[in-house]
Amino acid sequence: MPLRILQSASFSHANIWLVMLVSLCVNIAQAGGEEPAEGLRDLPAVGATSVPQVASLRRLPLVAIEADCRRNSFFSSSLRSPNETPLFGGPEITAQLVGPRILGPAASCQNLPPLMPPPSSPGFMRSLGRHGVASPVSPSVASSHAPPPWDQMPTAAELRGGVMVVNPSQHDGRSHNSQFSSGDFTPDPFYGYDAWDSHGELDVYGGKKLNKIQRPALEWGLPFYLNGLIPRSGTALGDTNLIQPKFLVYGDFRTAMAQNKNVGNEETIWASRLNLEFDFWLTSTERFHMFWGPLDQRNQFTNVTVDGGDANFNNFFDGWDERTDTMYFEGDLGYLIGGFRGDYAKFDMPFAVGLIPLLFQNGIWIEDAFVGAAVTIPARNSPRWDWSNFDTTLFIGVDEITNNPVFNGDNQAANLVGFTTFIERRGGYIEAGYAFVDDGENQGRSFHSLGLSYTRRYLNLLSNSMRVLANTGQSGPRDQRSADGVLLLMENSFLTKNPYNVIPYANFFAGYGTPRPAARLQGPLKNTGINFESDLLTGFPLLDDTGNNTYGAAFGVDLLGSSFEQQLILEFAALQVFDDPASRVAAGDQYAVGARYQKPLNNSILFRADVMHGWLENSNNISGGRIELRKKF
Image (cartoon, rainbow, N blue to C red; front, side):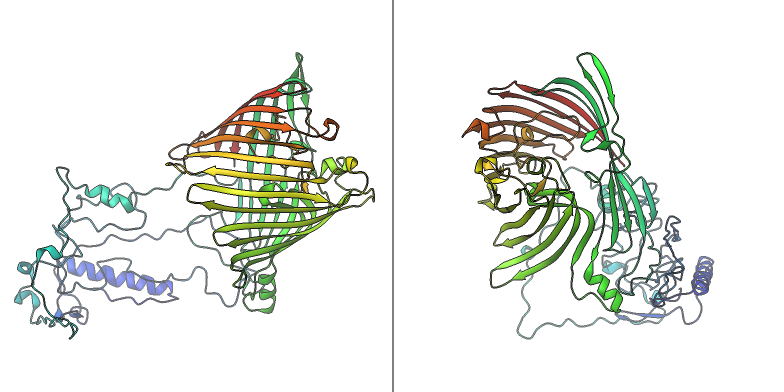
């Protein structure tokens, strides 16, 4: 019987080969009927003074060690930490590499018949021959774990002088023996007329397979979520903030064809956009990130349009567009300071600096990328206020603030400073934010922006969000102010018997004056319904999304497939106007019906189709239909 190998943090190659050689020799000796070496024969076991080696033990197959050659990293040798163990040193040994099990069977173990397949393993097993040479036996017939029947106990000759010791049963002195009753035990399972499927039981664990996924277009350094060994980390940022460089390029390509009838014109358009994400990770918390859209410029996308029988190719290739692209560095100040000092992080404080994208309050209040910085104080709690969790983010923007209606499309005219907080309290979620948008040209367009929302579920029937968007502080006559108003939003989704597959919703809004987001390209009603949302590609028609002296609602149902393999949204939207027509964008009341269908064609290609028709009072009606393919990489 092979020697027991103790677990060790470091085990040399020579020791591994020596153990393999000893195990192999012992197996050959046992196969030839020879006795094991002295000292390896009679190991103590539970319940017996000595237990012999049983010659009929099932041999375990050789265990192959797979080396993943895809592992690599930048600066692998120059940034080695002196506190690390060798990367390619011997692994931690938890089981022998060859031969039968390390320990001999105790007296309470039953030997399996020849050619018996091994017990099911929770790890991944290959499909071919994963059940062994023969099929697994049914439960209670023979098991490598169940105690043996008394008629199969070892004989005196098999014990070779060993004495079986049965420990007397012991129990608490305050308890006493009771009469046996068959009702004390659950009856054995009844399988009816169906035979027990041993393969199916093993497949619960051993029959799993990896799903096909789409890998990033480029993986340099540590691959993105793969199994296997992790390369040696560097310590340039400290022993407690280890460097594990990786560079990823991923994104998607969207191409869509649409027939649009907007208020101004009717055209057929085929437009495309390419979204590229460049991700360079230094550590688990520090990275450089850049987004680049080479096929769009100033929110115009490369397209072919057919208008009045004439086809035109519109080229919007660009090298860099600070209005739509991003480039920033983000990290955690606590880990950077901890690595510099040589101790572990005392606090968490993530931050970002550069041309940073920010999204707050579901994008209704802020959804923009601007030049600036942001820092967050995360994961705090307050027993006094009964806040189980809250975080606070401070931000400042000095350029590329998007607020077209207020600053006439000039992204360099405004500066921005503010804060936002997210609070969990008694089953509800509170979001509150304040920002001051400063007019850098001193034309009286500066304003204060406030966003407030509360979300929770009621009676396991309704999920509700109440939101308020308010602007104030602009100077000049009220009818000439471009950001001076209040928008009230109510978002509701209802729980049904199929809460994950059938989701009815009803969203309401009422806007007074000219409510504006603090920084956002589209209007604040984008998330109210699909009839208020543009596709940001083909110029798909939509209802007025400004909330400027209007009120209305969107009613719809979101239908998801049983396996979430497809989605269908049906919606009706209505918008009513009030106050002076000269003070609002919408000329009159508006109504629309719309539908959206999405389905993945495979693991990387998504198909989407949209259709809508709108009736506009005091204006031409609008309609549109589009199909889109999106390829992920």
